[in-house]
Image 1: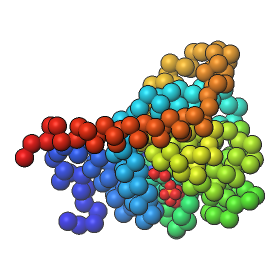
Image 2 (image 1 turned 180 degrees about the vertical axis):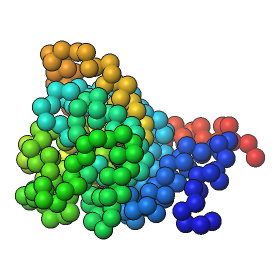
Image 3 (image 1 turned 45 degrees about the vertical axis):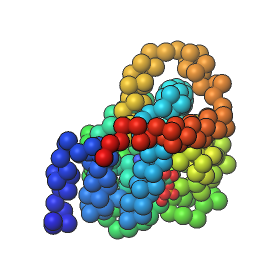
Length: 265
Ligand code: PTJ
């Protein structure tokens, strides 16, 4: 197979793991087009592993965190959605729709700097319908204090009161928290440093989370400020993380008991 050939076409829709393979191939194609960093493949595999032990579904806990996150986005004065290579490759159209509904601009922010990557991501977002994309002009960038990685270079994020960071590394989440910003993380690993530092951690696969956020945003958009605050105010992220860990333990225990029930050789 040639490197740029769409490998997804070779996976039959009837394949029991079609959905998972479809997104895996989007990541591979994204890497070939410079959208995804090489390390993005490894990050995706780590995510897949956690998704497995959460049952590959958006759990009730994730749904609750999604509702709180959408309320927080609608309440924020200067929200920004941070976009990296994996997210741009997996769900660009949905990202643009969410950004428009909650009026949170998209800012490209990459951990791995490589010539051509920002342009490649900008192009995928534009093709998905984005009209304004931030984080692309080096002259408009400033550097965040207390951070050495490439993620320190930000544009709107510097002034944002809330930043949504899907598939982030822990260092910048920590730096953004120290700048008193509200952080929404989407991370399948409930005990990653990002998950622990965030104010609202959605433990779910980004490919399911963003469409669900769009549905919830359509419903919450008509609520009053007071009603949105009521959704947001009693959320306890520590409890959320602990409950997600309990969910994983229970899921594995249940698998241990039942996994062979329908497995016939
Ligand atoms: O495009 P860049 O240069 O900004 O780089 C992006 C990656 C993702 C490569 C970079 O931020 C990175 O190395 O991230 P980490 O430290 O591997 O963390 C990524 C986290 O996202 C891990 O905890 C994974 O479990 C999680 N993850 C991976 N895929 C998904 C996911 N969470 C939700 N949905 C996914 N599809």
